[in-house]
Image (cartoon, rainbow over all chains, first blue to last red; front, side):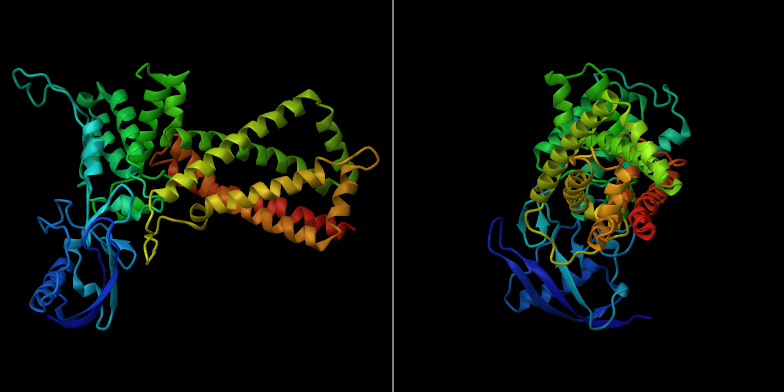
Length: 254
Length: 213
């Protein structure tokens, strides 16, 4: 049964970077509970446009939970209070008539606000550029199965590779640390033989870049794994720590 | 030297120093508690433990110096990590809600740590930097805990220490890379058990001494 609810939105409005900004309140009337959260904002934006106001800017792309573009903090929870979902997969049926919803952008020094709920997450790209890849020389493509990899290891690598880089871990971390993201990217490569070759350099370079970008320090609060839409485990952070210890204190890599 | 200090200067390196020194303090707490429990053997038993301990002479001084160095590293690194993490989110959220990861211990680490520092100074002034030529340690203890204010301060401090280690112990293992599907749940449980043991073990000593009077 389709149901409609009336809610009130308190949305962070910011015209651009470093502009004085604050919360604006908008009514959202006759919202179908079958709508996703983003569809609800679409409806509100249509009304705002008709009223001659600036629509709420927010990031989105695939709207099926796999691209990592969307994300906002809904009533203090990254991607809303549902476990293992992105904002686009979070539905209005989780709200009741008359609710007030506070919508804030990801808040971190490393994620400067571009407009309203849109933040610049290119810091993640810079961490990847620092070492989140393997170097492959040109030549004939090797056979896919030429290096045997145990099923459990392949699964662990895939679990880490499920990271869509949405930034919810940073947003949810009380310290605004990017350790879950960085550890997922280090793990997906460190677990596989192809990635082992550059593991030491990678661990050092990616951690250094992460620090340089002014992310906070991990203090094992575990909020990141609780909010991650792909449910990436903090066992990856422990793997990052192991890789870092090996690289920084045992290997001769600079 | 740079090639060693550079890794230690990163966020992960600083956390490693916190973990190693923190585990050192957990070991110290265990030994300190084991020694203090001799109080339940009576006044003479306790005083003889203190005498035996102090008869170790240079070994005690060495341990004290070690603890001092560990404390300096733990406090300075902790303060730096706290400051950097505050700076990493210049604009805070207007609504804060936990997703289920944070605990009382993890959320209060810098604050409980700071209070513990004040307490340790207070504790050392009371029991370490005092003239013990004409007084036994037990007398010192019973003089202090005859005062209910001291009992209150010590009880609060011990509860704060218990909260601090409830997150600190398992967290140190995680930082050192020791996360395992079989052992991590055990370690998390052990942290809670350890914090309860620390809380009850140290917490009842002032009360016991007071009741003995």
